[in-house]
Length: 458
Image (cartoon, rainbow, N blue to C red; front, side, top):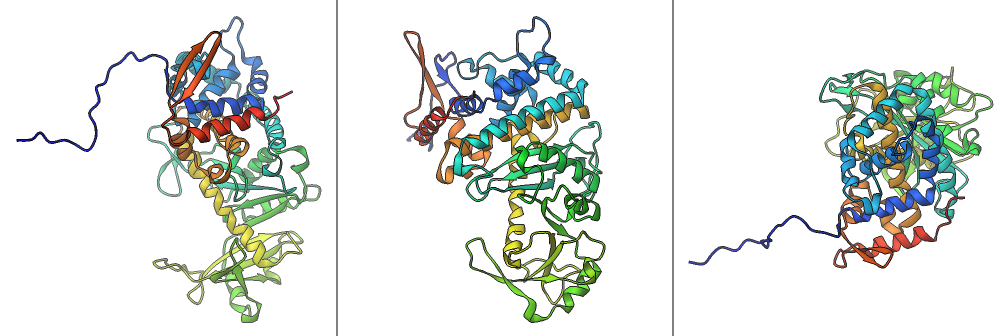
């Protein structure tokens, strides 16, 4: 009788291996931190919170947690993954030291948050100057997407409450800079709110937009070169009026609720006024048309606002709503952009769906839950999550090419960051040799070459 052989080889496992480095691909993130100057800037910003005779720098501690989150961690204790690899990540503080720093920063409330946010804004201005034509503002404009995120709480946390989806947790409002089709996106605001916070709360949208604009280079903090996009949660009189206020003059593309009044106006639009919708490549979008609504439906809204409606055949299995008409799904948005075809404006607004991908990436990068109990602590955690997402957006923008630039964090972790390496010491030099058989070793080394060619921060 023959012994059955399984499909996988049997390997003898022994502990005590030396000179082996796991997560060796994390050097991409470390080099991104160095070239962006984030380590020096964040250390200077958090210097007031460094205690006398402290061994570990608060900025380095915060960055270590952010790196752990970028590599897949979802709690403070996951910084132990970095502590185990001092060759790549340097000395890492103990878990109690990390917890004490978070408590200290949380006790400072807005003062610590302002310091971290100012540091991120300073580094962002430098990073955007490095990639040239690949920068988010290469076309002279910046697109900022706002979207709400539901974060489920599996235990009793401060400010956790029932959500509108009948879950329990928090309802942060986040903002992302859209890098376009050739890149991902980077977070610029994460406003922590209770789970029962309203979706259409204009005050929260205004606060989030203020914080997001403060993250942009100064020339984009006002004026039509900055486009604010939201879904129908932002379609309120107060928020739209704030965006269009004299002296601010921001461009906007805001989803609107199809009310009974809007529905009646749509029904009166003649067939000749409907224009075929288009796709990103310029081809006609099958079964979709757009039209601009005028007249009394704009009463009470800011001057210069345009209201554009889209009707589209529903996809198989979709259920029509009461506000739909003639078997068509209706969607409406408002904008103050003039001089462009309405089909082009509708396509621009539809591309706001990229924000859903950014939210999905955020959930996979520390936002699956809020690990701490108090709200002040979780606000610091949200800043850590944003730093991690910044690094996951900046590294591909500065170092990767082609399709690799739009890989989501999970794919980057699986292919690049988890690569193993061997530490070789020759004389006074330490060399990290990546596994030759790893399919993406060439991508890692090529990306590191591009990063090393960038100028060092002044």
